[in-house]
Image (cartoon, rainbow, N blue to C red; front, top):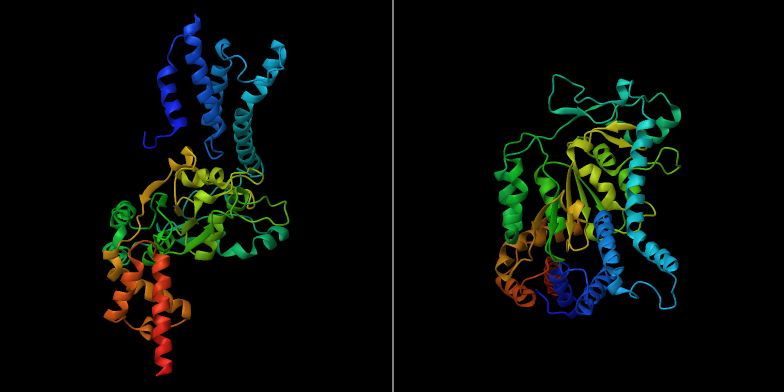
Length: 421
């Protein structure tokens, strides 16, 4: 065990004790009750982010064990003496997680069925088969719709550029032209850079597996996602994981006044090409409540290519081809993320930079400061050796955000001295 904590030691005991025989004498009862106590305690601390199906199975084991005769009294108040009353109370406790799992599955199935019912699968416009332009294999029609309906035309006016149009797929530049600047700007993340680019080696157009950049705050994860998009010449549409929910990301039904297509399609419409990048910042901070659907659950259909190729958008009420969209998410930790979501991402470990990375980081930091001021980086100029040494002493490695603040203070002090003299 990595941590020496009482509850972890108890759970370690459970691993051995779960296989002990059913108690036939008083000597085994104590062991059985100790296991039940540890399991119930651990289950009570189970995170809401745990996969519903796994939580349901865990729940069945925990309460099933606690219901053994040897553990009598652990799962019901002392005043309950009737077997019927105890069974009803135990059943209600056991059902909670499994009911949640069943509800989530039913909601997801209902949404797909409802979307499919609204589609006319005999209408060729409702079934995109691939590129509309047979002469250009690097173009694809993302959405085919009959736009004669006046209300539909009004709702979809902002997205007309992506409907019934053969959109281009952005071709890849030479990968060394992407890798080299990334290594200069993120010298501390060479392994993450190579892992991100490895699947592009044999491709002509951009499409890589879903990437999850994981690391401490301030390591430059979000900036890395933006820069890889810029160097690959594609549009990057960003959404904040802490403020997004499933309905906003997956699209809202056309019957609602605030109806809007799914976020990947909106990103395509803004990009004017079919293979943009969708950046989900701080995905680990997403809400776990299901009022409007969890972002984590909504993402599953987009991250699987098979379902992304025919995604049933509730606003457009047709299947759309999102199979060329790439996804990058950032997180400080994977601890809260459900297993079925993690399984769809390739995890990139993004460490914090160290003191020896300072010289490589400074040009990018100065460039960002210049852009924020609306200036050309040449107006700020290079730092003197005295200024660089002062920054090194005060930074010492770690967060790039902190480094940026220190550089900003140094530049501001230099500007103040220039004005005074």
